Image (spheres, rainbow, N blue to C red):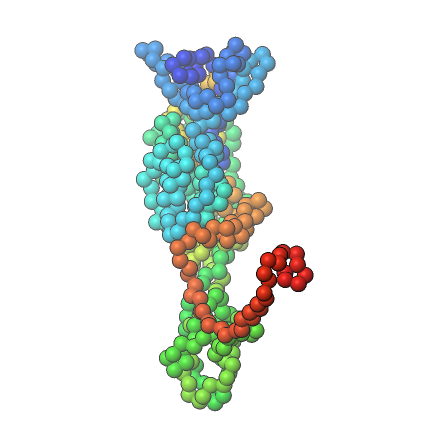
Length: 453
């Protein structure tokens, strides 16, 4: 097909484009257009401009196909510039400080998009997931969204109308299918990637906190009571149904017992009477660990094990769902390919698309993981397959791990935003002495005085 002439439009004025190279990156980065035009426009098209790229239809009306912001310029014989999609505005928002409690990922994304950018959240997908506590400490909207994207297999897309959608990858099906040799042609060979195959997995999450109580019947003068698990956090103890006050060695006030958490022991200051009923209420931690296998894949392909650690998995159900997703996505050798498609093919990154290649005996659904267009060459390439593993949040970079640690450390700076505390505090009245010293000073100066100071 003949490729139309493309123009850059700023305001109501159109300027001819010499070339552009578009890369649709999905979650891997903001979509960009590397463009060139006559150097006479160097002082007109500048960084910060909101522009659009399009062509003229049969009625000679401008049809907007892409839109975004100019973020880079250079020039010599031509004026060259880079246009970012409106999704780039997520990375240029003000720095955000927020704490979200018991909110879904989509609620958090909607909140930061609507409150910290000029984009409009238009997504309707629901994850069914609740994040117990999500701290945002000096981050842009883009950093917040990307942190969430690393935890769940979703995508963010922003339209030329500045509408933002947060949704599962492959949630939308393409309106077309690709048939190799008819409306698509192989640019490179199909690749099967066994090094991404995972069919035997261990998922290690964070430590899950449980609460329990244990009952004891005291023997004569018994002081030590050993519980089953190592104690985490606060403890509450009753003797014969009445709560007693705990303390620690070195406290001034009186207390009935102290706690040796490492030895899992409640230690009473005075031995109890025979048959006293002691109940200990406490919290303990157990590491979240899930083992799962894809037996059919192991039979066909052999064993490909993987251990994944992610302290963002706070519950057994979350770890189990994560393991299931990995086995489903990577349980079979992954096939990827790059196809040349028609210039006007209606395909978008993140969609699922049916690909038929009779010569290679392929007829299956793929996820579109990348797109590119080159003008005036008129070539459009569609990359299909599965996203690389690093988008599913394992083997995190050191920067990401440090950031997670910083978030935990920085929570103390945000404690004033809470209206209540989770843990109970035992307040013990202590008796002490107050020393009062009096002196008749008259008009004597106190500061710096060795006598009166």
